[in-house]
Length: 503
Image (tube, rainbow, N blue to C red; front, side, top):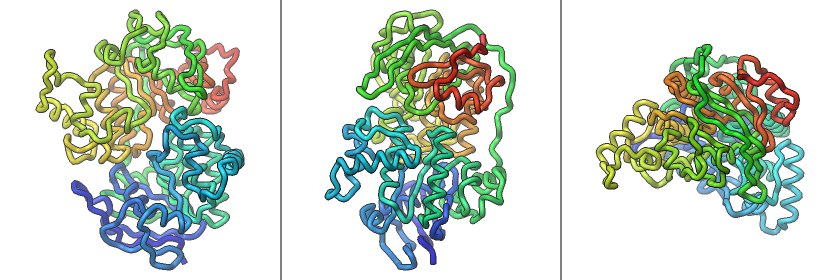
């Protein structure tokens, strides 16, 4: 008997058929991957299982019995829990209060706090139950979602890109947890674009392309190349490493210290580095160690920067607004897409106006013809799957929205680019495209700062790397001289005495 059976599931949206007669079966205790490129229909399928989306046709059986999952409450009553790629948390409530909302209200808040601490410790997912959600980084919010799911001992756990902002150590801990859950009989539906993760963790895999099933395989017997061919019809190109000769310093930070803006935030302490023309400087580190604060200071979102601590081509950026910095040639991509990188309810064309003003005359008139044309150029160049420039940002899959936001900034041809989590939640083909575009921009003379929790990504594209831990920054080192093991040590702040800083 199967834990979950889907037969002929279809879902049509106005512009796309997200699922086209999809069938799959999940055994008790199985870790079953759902693999596909951005826009392949994975998230829609998972939302149907969780009751958040109603299918147009098809049937669902749960533990051998036909069921209609009409809402997430119905799914939870059956024993199904889901961790979304885009978090469903209330910003102004604490971690404990968010977890409490999904539980039996007869259980006290104090009991929930104790349970959170117990689960967080057992599964290696540290979090302060009393911290407000708005003070957490993306990685920390993901921990909250995972803990909220694990706290109920589910029969089926659905995970949508759970490791996208976790460190290698945290990923291994999570995998150990998932294997233990599976050993106890919990079934797991696992979505990830990281093919090595799927081959390491999962024992079944359903591959989707264009809303249809293209393969049912045992990923342990597949290669990254064979899975890529099933998913996107080809093997993704890999960037060719090359020796670069950077130019003069473009973006310079000297003695940057900032108190946290939130009571539980991380203070920046004597941050200093430089990014040169034609160079990519990678910033590694466990999520929540001050990366957000650093990006906010560099982009102008945090106006408290002291004079002469951030310089662009020798000019002091203190008191310069984000708009003024963009006008000077500094663009940035935040780690949060919806609500920060894009306004969900606005069209893609309208979202270009957030950071691109070529379509606005000196008198303030907007040329919507130019706005539409710019949006279409971004869609075409970065292979964004959308209904067109008029599509709302929230209608795109997470990976396609990421490609659009990254494309909006890269296509501006900035002189300096600050980008956080550039390939979070995108498929292998899209990740390769984004990384290639970043290196092309670097080769054109742009100074690029990349903040990422994906070490493979940083090793692939960075010329030099630094590590951030507890608001402090390690010395910069040429990527060719670093190892994953050394980066792991430095993530704990253990770089005192390091003397290999690159000139």
